[in-house]
Image (cartoon, rainbow, N blue to C red; front, side, top):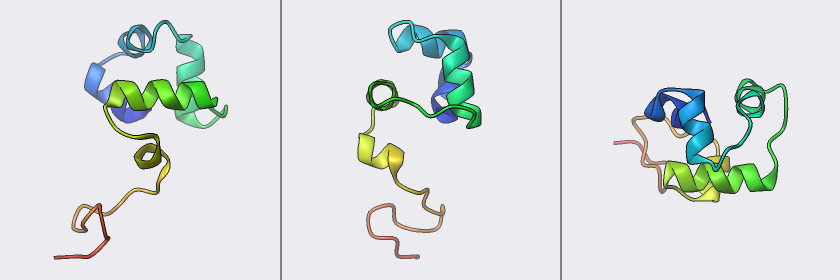
Length: 72
């Protein structure tokens, strides 16, 4: 969620890209105060132009392959 905000610049822009999701909801989910709904996950994946699986998987270190996890 924070990555989408960094790309779009403001929570207002994120809200507009997600068909008007409440800005307070976006902020609370991004900071961990609230869990996002499955619909919010789908909207986030659509706006981020990625898959739900990639969004929900743990981050991969920059020196590792995001497909298999190998370094180098």
